[in-house]
Amino acid sequence: MTAEDRIFLKQLQELRLDQLRRHALGDAREVIARAEALGPQRELEHAERDRQADLRLEENARKKKEEEESRRLEELRRLEEERQRQEEEKRRKEEARRRQEELRRRAEEQARLREQREREFQAKREAFRKAQEEAERRAREQAEQGLQAEARRQERQRQEELHRNKTQADIVAFFQLYDAKWQELKLSKNLASVMLCEMPWPTFQQGCTSPDDISRRSMEEFIFHPLRPGIETKSHKDRLKAEILRFHPDKFNSHTVHKLQECDRGRAIEIAGALARMLTNMMAEEIQKETSR
Image (cartoon, rainbow, N blue to C red; front, side):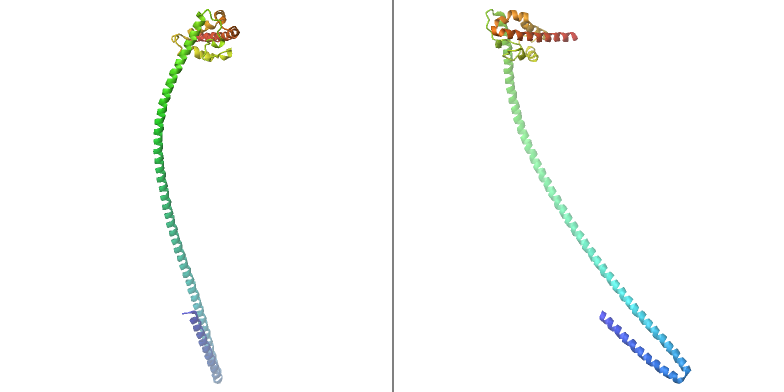
């Protein structure tokens, strides 16, 4: 039933009630007239009936009002139920939409994660392939470098061996020249023009012209060198003693200095004196070492 139908029915009911009221009023007037005619008793009876009629009218009006109120409440209840039903339907639809959205989001997230894992897997596989290729390349390079390094090492060893042999030969030749010069200074009686730079000083440094040109370290390296021929079995004391006899001032100044050029003799004496002092200190230290043993 539509709202217009309900309004129409309500108007019909109101018209019917109005007619009933009019008939009731007409009946009441007739009753009053008869009551007046019949007398006071009839008036009392009619009054009672009128009272009863009024009560019935009031009761009917009350019932009608209650019915109308009941219908109104029923309509309100129905409207409230309809509203709740619509809200529940709306809530269910919204919940369904949220579930669909959540399912779609989860599906997209899972697809994204699968795609990401696939990309990571591909990246790791590519990185592993590149790392493997790089390792193989480095292994090849290291192998080649190892071969090249070994070849260079062997060549270096060969060159070092040649250089060492040449160096050792040069050192031995230097010692032989040193001893030969002293032999010449000792035996020759005609030498008188030996230059200072030609003097055989106990150091590998050549061309010494000042005591500062010869250090104790350079002299120790020369005197105790393992390649010096002819004195391999001699002790440090014996080696020092041989050099002290050459450069001691009494021996050097009387047997050697006059064989140098006159302009170099003063510096030669100065150098020999400095060497003699260093040699004497070295000899004293060797004696101290033997004593402490």
